[in-house]
Length: 136
Image (cartoon, rainbow, N blue to C red; front, side):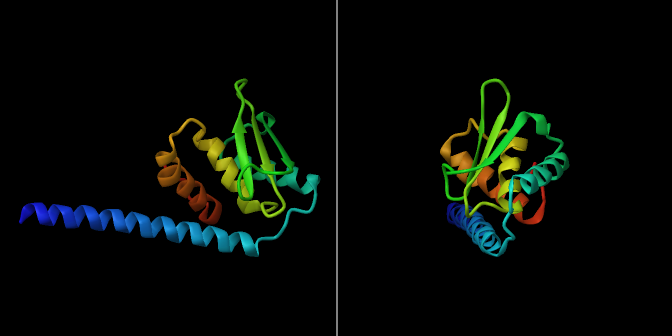
């Protein structure tokens, strides 16, 4: 009987985690659809300075541009010299995507396995882009 209870308890916990992840992902995509577009490079630099400072990041180490992202809307990359690059595509030209990618830099989410990335790091970045809450 104890084994059945443990199985149900673990199964319920896993189901709850999956439901939360689905909620965070769906909330992020609806936020993207309604976000104001970043108009030009000047506005992008201003937003970068403000959002990076909220996370305590050194903006001098981050290059940013519009272009073809290696994902749906944007991506960030860490180089061996300790600098970073953020690329935002047309759909990702908004503050939320910028915040999302800066959060990956803040958490240094560049060396993880796929399971950790999809279950912990990506939902954490989605929560930060939407709500501004840092998951430690």
